[in-house]
Length: 245
Image 1 (cartoon, rainbow, N blue to C red):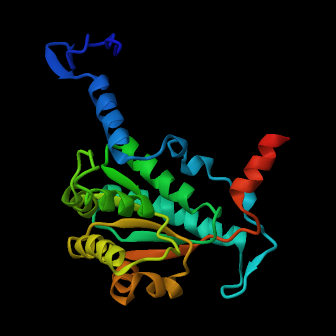
Image 2 (image 1 turned 45 degrees about the vertical axis):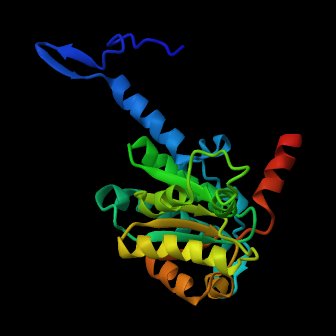
């Protein structure tokens, strides 16, 4: 049973003098609903820019192409994430971001830090893991065993139209023509309607077209500013070791 608000008794309004104003619990409940609708996994609800830890990015390892340290590159990606939050609050049609890098380099953490910051400000965000979304769409084709409440149209159209979409793990999978077309449909719609995307991928921007196709890659790079995260060891593996000691 949900607790009754001590300020308004769950009426949703309180009196300030002779004026009725919305109670703070109304916003709190609305934000709670937004977090649930975002589909962010519990583990990722604590990802914030304030918790982003630069100690995992070496100062003495250099990106050969740019001549910048892993630490310096992480700083640039971090700043881009913070700037995106500020820009999205002013203009929901701002450019998106594409975070690339190997497994365990902090890509998803940064993407979810953006999501959590905007959700707390009352913005609508949808987080989807690309392989899971494709599996969900496929499952709707099985009319005998599928008992879900969503149709293929529901799933794809939500991803198309949500104000901010986070596509996590747009990785080096074996994409079929069918899955490429689904991803293209979502990205092309969002490009045409100037709706931003945050993408995480373990594919370099230069190699994306090998997996997604040229037309999808072209649109994605038009929509998103690319940032690469580099580490000399999987951050998750390091964090596991830290817990064990």
